[in-house]
Image 1 (cartoon, rainbow, N blue to C red):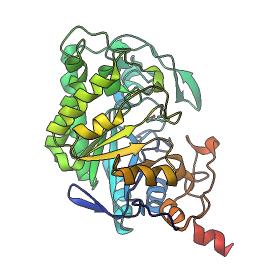
Image 2: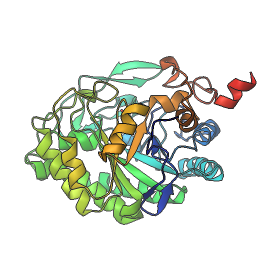
Image 3: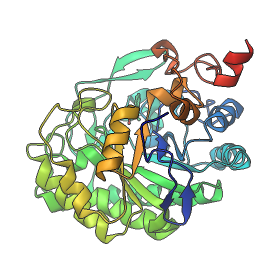
Length: 366
Ligand code: 8OZ
């Protein structure tokens, strides 16, 4: 590889040193073991195979049963789940890796069949999203949600706090708060989904409140130097929208900076789609935040190299390339070809399309 790149240079992220700038993005794989939604042995193998990433971020993991929106996603609220995750962190650490868990509440992106007592999913406002979820082996419209009572909000903040404590107990190096992609915290932040008139709706400050309160309790629980957050200012994912995302996210990032979070992980553009879907000044977020900037969405070696060289980001998160290339770091280092991913095995199933993607050495031996 002749192109000079910072991609393989170490980076100090709070108390931990990453050997390179590649982050494995959080990726939903729907292989947790029901009924307890416990991550199983196959997940330990999957994350272990990818331990050469500078940092692994787990698939989104619900902080409560209410926070689940798709079948077979893992939780981080029960003892059994903590025990399952502990085996994963042990495997990753044995193999020399570093791993954060993504803490998730889906809000209105759920289905009554997944909710406690078959109830309605919860949301800032009773507005159904025009999107689908994956339940009972197929895609289904999300259910009509109900608006959270003001009195229920502290309980949700507590769920995140407890999940952060569980993450520490499970041996994670840190957590990433899921503030992106049209899930609960993003629903509160954006005026397309939040029509509340109480302290959690209306002004930018009020809409951002839940995301910031969650950030505050999580960082108080496990340390700001072990707390990151993922945001997606302009994504249309899960039918989310905001009439004026720039001042909203400028404000949010100013506040996250004051809380001294270790990183912001920014999905630039449409999640898994075009980077230029809407105008947005990401440099404005970069400028406001003293911690690390993790850039995500459709990065390849060239774009990653360019953005790191310009100083526009510190770390680059790769999603689908990490699904199909456990040894992505080595492949990019060598300029080796990448395996294609198989969309049919993204969500649900077993080892196929999960732990059976070949690494370079295996291919050479075949
Ligand atoms: C794909 C399928 C289900 C959930 C996200 C957690 O978009 C997800 C997700 C992605 O953040």
